[in-house]
Amino acid sequence: MTNLEKYIDAFVKGLELDESLVKSGLAYSEIENWDSVGHMNLIAELEEAFDIMMDTEDIIDFSSYDKGIEILAKYDVIIE
Image (cartoon, rainbow, N blue to C red; front, side, top):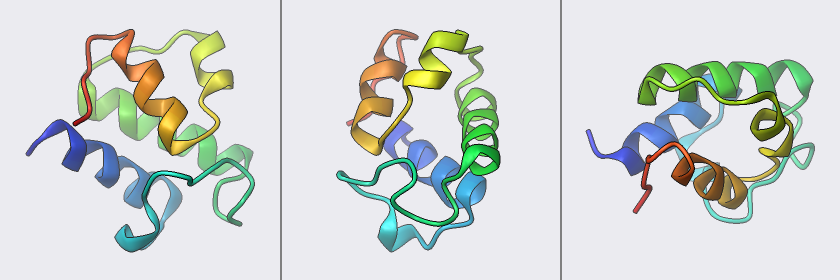
């Protein structure tokens, strides 16, 4: 599985979204499932998928699909 596939899968599982909704432009609070609980589920899925532990600041800053790609790069996870 590629990093992009893992990334999308984390959104699908963590936020219980249809895969077709997971794309650039997706942002926190713009969809019902991405609330505070959904956010922590998403973070847990990402940490497990990429075997990382995100800093609290990064968890808070993780506000969109695009921002998440930027944040994961800090952990040497490249999403292409």
